[in-house]
Length: 132
Image (cartoon, rainbow, N blue to C red; front, side, top):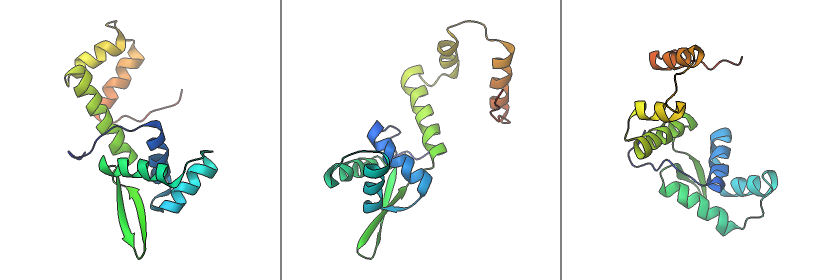
């Protein structure tokens, strides 16, 4: 997780990021077309450019020049972003204390065996979310 990355984005910025995470490197025209045609937005060039600039300023998107065109891609993976956001939440609201977070999550109540086992799996590093 990069230190110069801001792990937060608006809902509109997340549309751009999710597209780049899913599709990889894209041109401005491809991003704009996706947002307007697939996401049903009616955004002008300046609006889309603003979202891309904000994401670039946050360190989440990088741009490369390819001839006369510029292409954009995610600077972090979705997993890296989620991890950074989780650490930020933990630090901002719980003083970095996992214990305080878990206490808030459980409402201070005793947890059931299933929850405790799942938490143990995460801590031991062999967590694989299972549908039951």
